[in-house]
Image (cartoon, rainbow, N blue to C red; front, top):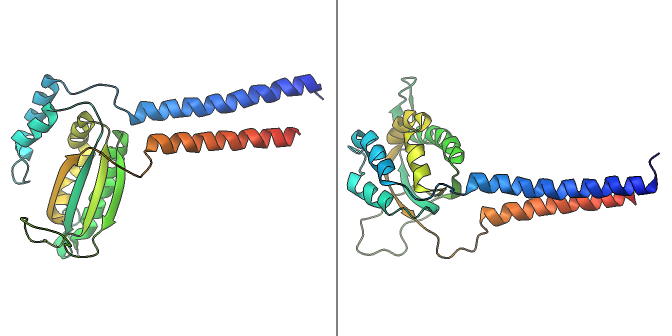
Length: 222
C-alpha cells in the first residue's frame, strides 16, 4: 500500500489534472466558437461573390445587399433571423420521384444544413413554430401564414460564406426551394438578451463537472 504522503501527492496531482483538463476543454471550445481570423478582406469578398454570382437569380437575393453586408464586416458573430412558410402540399421528391409533403424536404434540408453550420462554428439560437396571426403590424405586407422561425448564430460572416459554398449545403438547396413557399432572412447582432451565452454556459458546466469530480475524489479518499 502507498504511504499516506504518497497517497496525498497522487490525490493532489489528480486534482490538478481535473482542473487543468476543464481549463483546456474550455480553451478548445473557445478556439472553435470564436472567430480568430478577423474581418473579411476585400479579396475574399470579391472571390466569394464571383463564385456565387449565378445563385442570386431566382432566390430573391441581391448581390449589392450581400456585398454591403460583407464589406461592413466587424469580425463579430451575428444571428440570422429566418421566417419560413413551409410547403405543406405534396411535391415531387427530386431524389426518388415520389410525391412527398414539401415540409419533409425542408426538414431533410435542415439535416444537411445543421452539420455544416456546426462545423463552421454556428448553431441554432432558437427555433419555434408560429401559433397565431400578426398581433401588431403596420405598413407591412399581409401575414403570408408563416410556419416557423429560426435564430441561427454564425461565428462570423466569413463562416457564413464557407457554409454557402459547402457541397453539402449546395446539394441540399433544391430541397429548401421545394419545401418553402415563402421566406425572408436578415442578419442581426444582439443588443440585450436574458439567455446565457454558450461561452458562459460551457464554462459553468465544465466548472461544475470538475468541482463534482474533485469532491468525489476527496470523499473517496476520506
